[in-house]
Image (tube, rainbow, N blue to C red; front, top):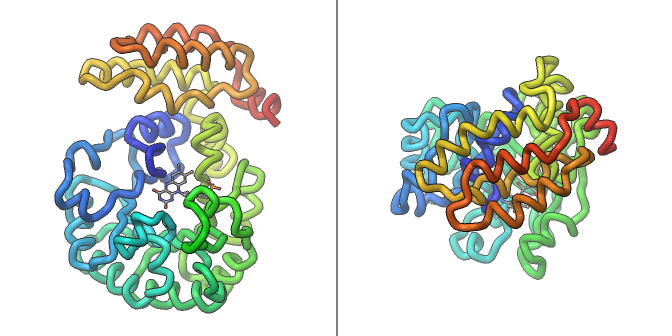
Length: 322
Ligand SMILES: Cc1cc2nc3c(=O)[nH]c(=O)nc-3n(C[C@H](O)[C@H](O)[C@H](O)COP(=O)(O)O)c2cc1C
């Protein structure tokens, strides 16, 4: 998610779940090929498994980017066919590619031809006045023929004409049934549903019908939910017993990054929602809001903020926040 899932966010989220697949922000092919690649694409080995999301529609450029990503060690390449912003439309990629399934197929085929990584597509169920049955079928057919490894479907249309990107995340109604029908029609293709999924109970309901669930805003705004992912969805041990333990585990990373010149706030802004329902959560947020933004703020500011919250195990947090 643009401006949200940068490398600091991803490192932090990986402290909360070993098993969930984590995605980068969308990075355009132009930025990969001509931008500050080290800054835009760097990731910590601890982030694995991590997928790079690309924005673009030129098959040759996308293939170049896929090779670069594979060389850097990314685990998956995901093509954005869902972003509705004007900038993206001008570049003729993102959600407007829903109207060009053959081109999406060419993009996927070009990437698949150059890398062994899984190549996936994140799309909508349609755009504007497209019929979601036909539009999603056409896109899926083209992507499948090109060898796509999975589709992540944001289960609502994007209205390119008239709605802002923000409105496009909430206003067009969700249609999970359309995604379930897609899965029923393509039982051997991995289908992941996205959009409006706010907790792991809802995720489990979807997982009875599709292969995966992608959580966006809920994962970012309420990261404490991720602490239960490994145990609830994967039957594995939780990475940390409590949000506080996870925050403490972030301290060495904070120290390392500050030593490299990163500002404290660039990391702690992603952590603000970690303590929902935990006594001391408000003091934690307030301390970071006032102190972490100050020039030269050090790791001690983060440590002091963490000291303000009670160590409450993840299970109790789930119950308290429910
Ligand atoms: C701040 C923000 C940035 C986003 N950036 C991207 C992006 O770069 N690529 C993408 O595929 N979706 C992006 N999205 C959309 C989300 O991935 C997701 O599809 C959408 O928010 C619906 O899922 P949710 O209800 O779980 O959040 C973004 C959403 C938000 C709120």
